[in-house]
Image (cartoon, rainbow, N blue to C red; front, side):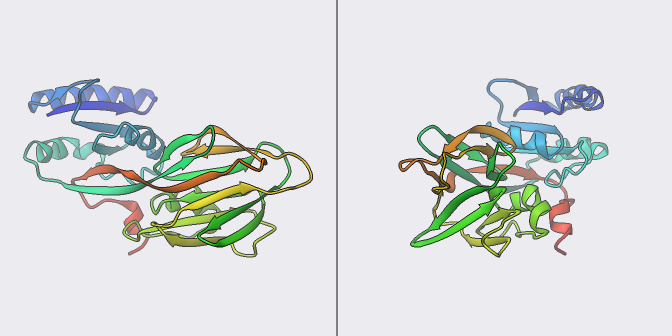
Length: 248
C-alpha cells in the first residue's frame, strides 16, 4: 500500500511525520505524493478538512487542539499502522456538501457559510421545496452532521449525530427568523438567495473556512446547496472519537 503523509504546519508535527514515515517504511508501506492509496493526516480538524478534499481514504493522527474526528493518538501510531498492514480497520463514510452558483463550484466536509464582508446584516432567503424562509442577521451556515460539531456548534450548542442523514441550517445572530437552526433530510436541495434590501448586497461564500466566491443580490444569482455524490472516507482503528463521546 502507498501512503501520503499530510502534516500540520508546526515543528512538532513535522518532526513526528518523519518518525511516521520511517515507521511506515519499516512495516513495508511505500510513501508517495502522487499515487497514494490513503493519506495519513497528522494534525487537527483543519488539517483533516484539507486532506479529505483529495478524495482518498484518510488515517487521522490527533495532533491538534480538538482533533475530534481523528482517532489515533501519537503514541498509538505503530499499533495503527500494524493494524493497517493486516487490514484490520473500519471504513466510515461521511457525507459532504456541494454548492454551486454562476461562479462557484465547491465541496465541503463541514459547512458552507454565507457571511457579509461589512458590519451590517445580510438579508436573504432559504428555499426548501416550496417553503421560503426569510432571514436577516450575520448570515447562515449549512452543515453536515460532522460540521454541526464545528463552527455551527458555537452558534447553536446543538450536535447532530453523524449517523443521522440530516443537514443543519443555522441562522447566525439572526434578527429573523426567530429560530436558531433547522434540520432537514439530506435528500433536500437548498436554494439561498439575497433579497432586495434597497441596495446591492455582496456577501462571501465560505467552504470549510475558505472563501470560495461571492453571492450578489441579483435576480439571476442564487446558491444551490445539496449533498454531494462524493463521500469522505476515514479509516478507524480505535474507538476514541470525541464527537461520539459527547453524545454518550
